Image 1: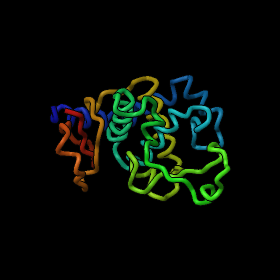
Image 2: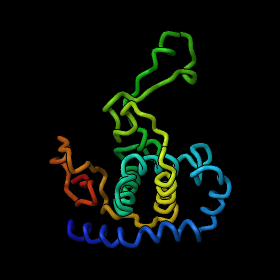
Image 3: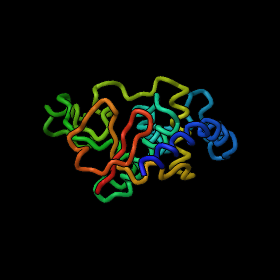
Image 4: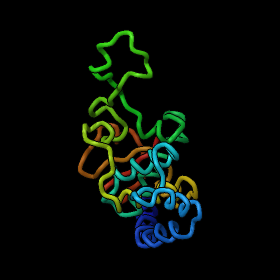
Length: 199
């Protein structure tokens, strides 16, 4: 099984670059999105396509330096979690799942309505580390951001390369050893990420 995943990753890495560019050119929905935001490196925004936007943010922050196979794999894990009852049932819920704390600016006002309160993720208490690392979540590398948006669209809307991780719901970088890893079944490695699924 691990050999199949590694072989698939190599095949995908060699063909996905052309596939991403070709998909962006031929898909009329992507062309329309690009036309609506010609001044930015964005195909869609947080407001008009929140699920795609959340998925693209996760691809960007978790895997922008990975091969395209690695980027599709990270996206596949998010979608696998959406389909798993142990996680929220929407992309943004999965990507932004975290322990939250209220800002001191709003906490001091006891009569403030809840929709006006400000909350921040607690450091190191998130499903994906970029969301609670204290740094800006804004994508700064325009080319990588646009590619993450295309990949998010391809896997979410067109199901392109869906299943590349063979049902994985977890991954970690090769340079860390999380305590949860031995409790899960190893699926394989793509780039600098090792993928696992529930037993």
